[in-house]
Length: 97
Image 1 (cartoon, rainbow, N blue to C red):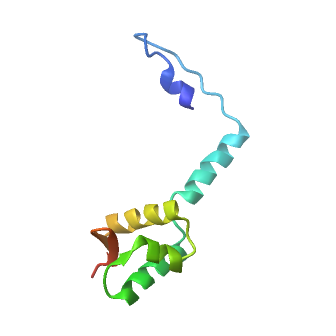
Image 2: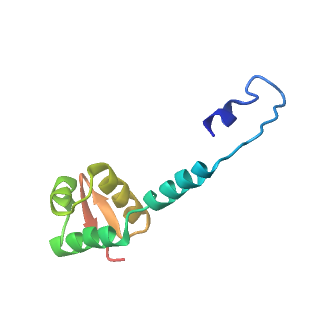
């Protein structure tokens, strides 16, 4: 799909024909499955922050929860956008929401 974006860059008009295969469905399914953390992991992080009663550094969360750092950071951003947690300096805490 990346090449489609290059079509017509230097032209006024371009025609693109997209040919897809069965493997494309597998790729889409992968991104759908991994776009958001599993509910159990999110609940574990929220529970940890609730129990702490105050801000917790990401390294401490990482030590308690079996989640890769990049995945944990993405999860915290999602939870922050949903109002479940908030960043406090370099740490995170549970909101009252």
